Length: 484
Image 1 (tube, rainbow, N blue to C red):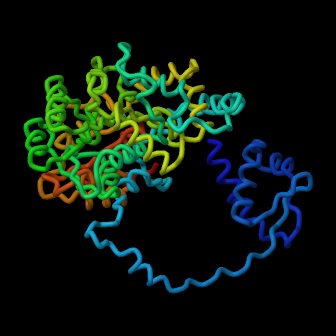
Image 2: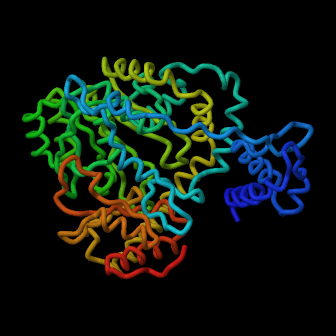
Image 3: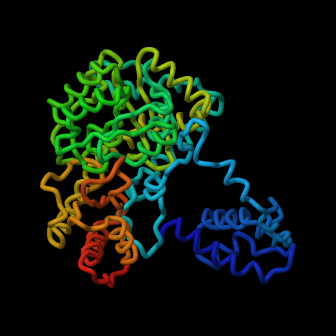
């Protein structure tokens, strides 16, 4: 049993028992709870903390834990209809003020215990370096000045580390080109709000990561899709889109694209930079999956930023995917006046990334555990990919693309013409497996129905196989009858 489940189970037991006590009556001691339920002191402490947070008990250091007094009845709901006017979708300028986070919230959804998660883009906790993170956090907290105010741009040592990782061994970037951000999503938001004026177009790949579309629309921008194929964005259409829209930015994922898994070909890498330079536009390179390369992949191409001396590329990188959803530390790179614009926007939004998080990131990437994580994760992801592909090839081969990505954590499945991807995803969920409908990945009407299947979050290989089995039975119109 994991520590997480033990805490939840003990909290549920205590929650049920607390009503047996009168107000102010003392509950059993921590030692008694440890002996009775055969759990660790940490489990007892966390379960009690959960009940304190719910207002059911009060903890008095040195005295014990006591049943809390009765809480006042909740105040009834008032009339909030006035908010329909205050939050009206239309401003005087005609811009839509709503933020469509459907795709983002869907990816962040926590699945019920009986639903196999082939939706999430985060590694299962067993693949995360939890011990190394805990040790890094402890060491970071003891660093001199760890709780002081960091520079707005980020810690110099961390900026230098990102510069080496992104720019490569030839030193294409320096620490002064790097701004530390609160993860990749924050970096995307800062980049688009800094580089593109509200109401203006921004070019995006089609399909593309829903978080990019959400960020663009929240900033008042107009996403314009540019179709892709197996070699990445179609550069002829990219040039036409720049000419037609006069856009000043193009957002792309050249490596293990989400959701298709495509890698931008060598020829098109040069074309993307040439076209953007001719248009006087920026290329926002979202390099989210570079650290998620599989151990059987060919050598990776360098970043677009490493081939760009002129400040065309604004590069986004994050530590979150390879470590933990809660280590929200990333970086965005830029040169020239664009960097100052990025710096100003982030300072206005959030001042800076908390120093303890930056110190933790520095401790982690400087430890032997970091090399192990970069070695073990590619092996685990490759094994998971092979398991998912083998199950799909056996049960529903018509969904598979001929080119399987050797990086990332997902497969892009083509549904039969006429299928409704949202209905298929909803039916699969009822059948006990969560997959992602393809529609949120398109800025306009999708040309065909798709599903995205992620193999990062399941507990083990057996769950991946069972999840694909449940998906196949859904497509066949049969209940799976399986259990997690």
